[in-house]
Amino acid sequence: MLYFSLAFRNIFRNFRRTFFTFLAIAFGLAVLIVMDSMLQGIDQDSFKKIINYETGHIKIFYKGYEKEKDDFPLDKSIPNPEQIMREIRKLDEVKGVTSRVNFRIMLSDGVDQLPAIGVAISPQDDEKVFLLKDAVDKGSFFEGDEEGILLGEGLAEDFEVEVGDYLTILTRTRYETYQAMDYRIKGLLKTEDPQIDWLAVVIPLNIAQDALDMEGAVTEIDIRLKDPSKVEEFRQKLSEQIKGVEVLTWKDLAQDVLAISKSKYSFSIMIFCAIVLIALIGISNTILMAAFERTREIGVLAAMGMKRRKIVMMFVMEGAMIGFLGSVVGCLLGSFLAFLTIKYGIDYSFMMRDIGNIGYRSTGIFYGMWRPGMILTAFIFGVVVSALVSIYPAFIASRMEPTDALKKV
Image (tube, rainbow, N blue to C red; front, side, top):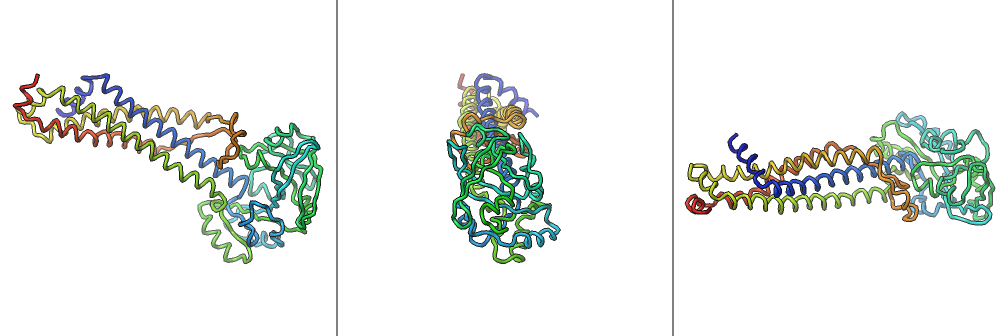
């Protein structure tokens, strides 16, 4: 208790020096907490959008399609989707199954043309796997076999069109013949996923199959599971049951986002190193200066019989207290800022369209997420590192001989 009282009193002897030291620690930890919250939030948001709008949990391709999927080859399609889907529906793990045809298109309003992606869906089955129906911001979703298209809001802004206007889809069929289709815009999609909002034109599956000469074939079958954590086990099971196809998980198809997610850890490590450096320089300097300012006091304590290890302990405790104060303030500040990013997000939409697709599935508003484990880790890290970097200057102070220390004024 004596050491604690002495250490607590000593950290306020030079308040300005102590204040700037713990403030630096607090700032570093706050930045760490906020950045981790943002990066994790962007990760989770991207993963949800990929699953909910693009891949489902499991995607089935015709053998060899995946290697050429960026070219949207219609000749590598699944010829008997209904038979496969019937078998899949019987499996207990499956929550929903649907099929799609993805194809490359040129979209035109009669004056301008822009490249886009055609996504042909089965309206009744699609909503069991994806959330496109819930993403209709203006207009309405498909009803029955009616003709029309759903347009991403980014494409609608590019063409300056609204619900009820007409656009022309220019594409090639399965047999490489040219096809032009005029459709009325039935609804506008707002998913916050750039792959949909900036690029997608959604069309009913039966209409697309007739226009593209697909003869009932599809380019993919998509599955949503009841338990997403068992996606890998289900993929293995499905691969053994269905031959002549490629069965991939959403993680296999989201390698770009997963690669970015992994690279962010390098950024987190850099912040950790910066905090260590701040603590090393700041606290070492604070403790060392405090030791030289209190040489007579150290001499008196040593002359009174205080052992060297207890002198070390006293100075280490001072460093730990500074780290504790800095960690408390840093965690509180970081948690408050993280709360703001979770509730309101950070809006980059004014620049995202010019930057283009950066891999993450966001059109501009990035949200954080709560990470209690990281907040606790940051707090412990700040205290422990502060205590550890105090050992060396404390050891220097403890080596002063009582007689030499008492001679100094």
